[in-house]
Image (cartoon, rainbow, N blue to C red; front, side, top):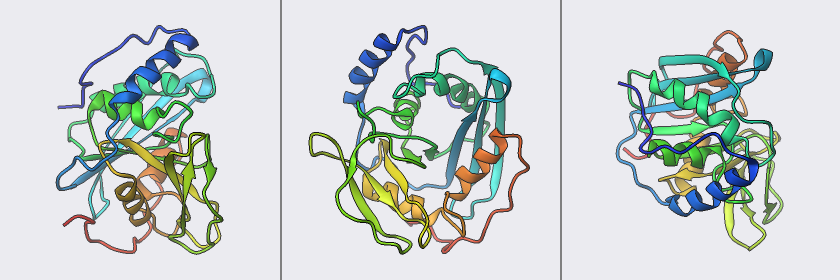
Length: 238
């Protein structure tokens, strides 16, 4: 079956061309819930061992979070490392991995930014737009923006991430007491509130959401980690 892009564009771009494309495509990002029942969630991550891109997509049942399928591919790197343009380096191999999926996810979670980006178009938005799928950006560090207020230390504490124009572009979310927060942002076809709820309920005893943690391990050639017990086995929107 596989997921194929709803449209395509050239990947043979200069950094200036890539910036122009981000600005153009960012206008198509939908920041509201456009999904039905979520039964399967796909997590995606990329690592760069030995000067190649190793892309991983893992498909999980939801809310059980059983690993249903995994695809792993290695490809040549087609775009240089440029801050703010990482999606042009990471998206091509991830699209190849998504094409190999047999099952179809209802929701994607991507290790990276969505609209919490200088041009409101990080990798989660790029993949969400191309695949036309509800997509969450879940990053480990802030790329752009400032917190609206101090963040509490307890699990579930949040504060908005504000862009330079005063717009809310994401949310800092504490997923475990006292740990560094994650940056959650809209990728495509999901509201920020729903994205935050999904990320929090996908986190077990670790800081990182379980699907994302497993995809990250596989991208680095690590064994599949044992999934920790989640707080709830019920769907958010059932």
